Image 1: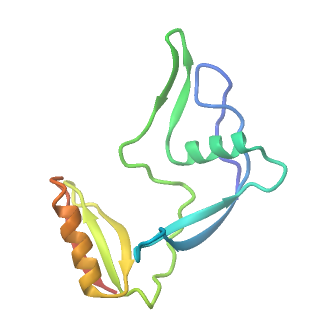
Image 2: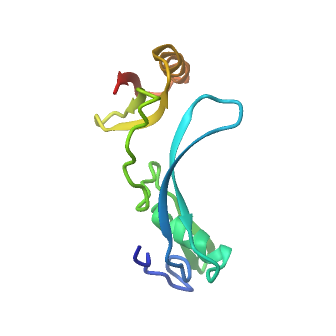
Length: 139
């Protein structure tokens, strides 16, 4: 994967980043049946943790720097990772829970083994009082 940047020391975003290898993965949070789609980023042994964190922040659209007033960071409300790859949907988890925002954009939240699990999570999220809608589709 190419190096992500640009990176600067003062007054503009960050510092040096690093090249990373990207591996799409699926996992579960402890004590939950919810499957999370993610990407594992491997910077290898030559990169420092700080360089990896700078690369991750930049890939999520975070801009940061320092000016006369001190350090600053701008974080997008809806980060979209440049690393994310669209993984194949797991066949053992055919019920997908989506969120739809005010603009009609849909985002996959999680996949579930049963329709009941997915609908229960959708109902739980809907009780949060947000404007977004939640719906379940069977893949």
